[in-house]
Length: 114
Image 1 (cartoon, rainbow, N blue to C red):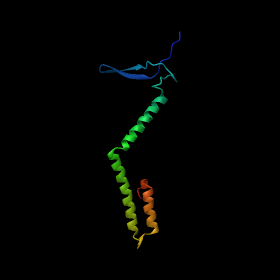
Image 2 (tube, rainbow, N blue to C red):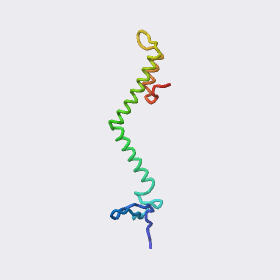
Image 3 (tube, helix red, strand yellow):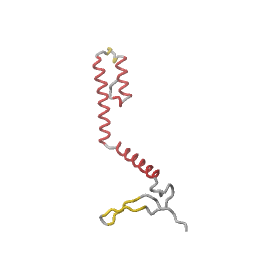
Image 4 (cartoon, rainbow, N blue to C red):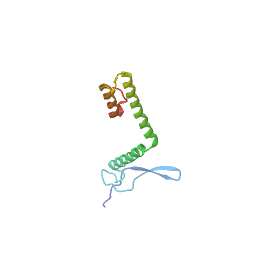
């Protein structure tokens, strides 16, 4: 008698309006779990789902608006710092003002503060 082990995951099903927990009926493949319920497979599916969700979220107009608003705030802060220094040359910005502006452009997460 060669009895195969069943998956040890408890799954939830509904009979009418009442939920019930039963053991998965698939054969165990690895570590007592079937292919679908093995923790590695579950984590892989969750990671893929989270990645798809993040990509979709980044395409949302509200997310893009928030990113643009943050970028504008950084640039406004850099501009304020340049103006507050109050020294420019006749032909443009002085060396330190140019560095402040370039830092703000390169590091948008800096929020313009050093």
